[in-house]
Length: 209
Image (tube, rainbow, N blue to C red; front, top):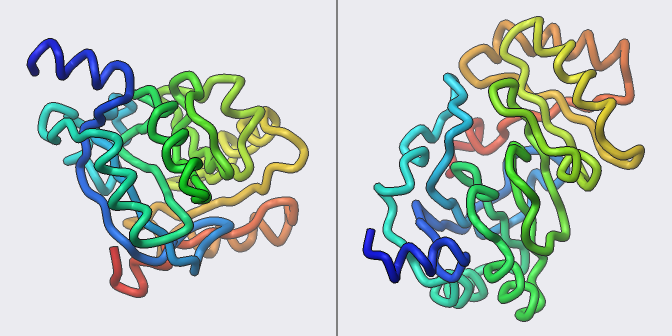
């Protein structure tokens, strides 16, 4: 990457854009809501069950001017979801400042592994064991969404729940490839521990992005 472009990426004035699309939010608190997704490339958290591994290498995704991203997003929806990859790999200040200036509601889906930048209306924290969230992201999260791949993840979920604020909504979501096995266990756990809620990847059932 050319030095001048790299400097703009480092400032968040350009971002490695993997894809952008208008769809229905499939997970968590805002499931069922029409939203415009901005997927930013770059992630070193390395979840083996990640369903967008092509997002990991930022070099594969063209640096795109933040102004261009914002102008396109504003045409489609009042609700914008920034996801990845891991979006907090990059400085989100410029992107969110411009989105907010257009009166948009701005959400992020993050592992919380990097310092929190940007101004957010909703922070969905989905922590990963390989690279734990920073205390700041945990403290400011509006929802905690823990992916349940096996029984050990119930313990991890409780550990992460102890770190978020008292108003944070708690979700357990089955990893897609293990859903048939884990959904009954999640249902049983949530019924016994009703501070938790069940989240499903409803967009996959609906066969939409």
